[in-house]
Length: 176
Image 1 (cartoon, rainbow, N blue to C red):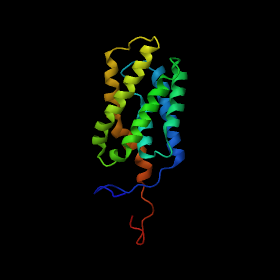
Image 2: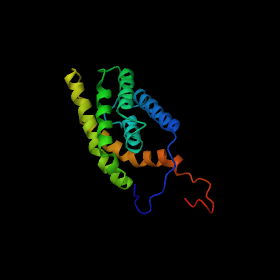
Image 3: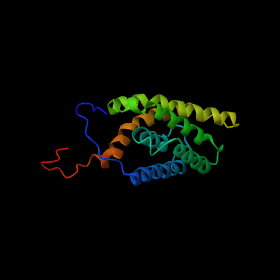
């Protein structure tokens, strides 16, 4: 693959780090739901952001099946309609896989603008399933959630790519 000018060559991602970051995002989502705001509609879904990030950067390691399992775990945690998050995360993962090659060619702020519609579709699907299951409308504040998730994209990119940016022991024979 031809790299953009100025783009740093990354080390391979550690699979253990990928799965630890996904479990940490799941736990952060669970803490966020039990925290100060409760299940506020405007709070960003950190697990969705991390799932999209790893689906874009490592599509062979984190796929639609992983998104489905994490979605079921979120459904069980929230005690809502079983399959609501699973369906939203699965659709989000599928959409992320469809754009992952094109998305990596852009800068991180441009990537954030391009994943915003993916997050909006996922929240729309989740809302549709909730309403079809007899739930209540959470309010118009939920429009803020995809915007906050897109704003989290640069932060997540910096944090999760940091271990791959470590320079291996450079020497005269290995300048990269």
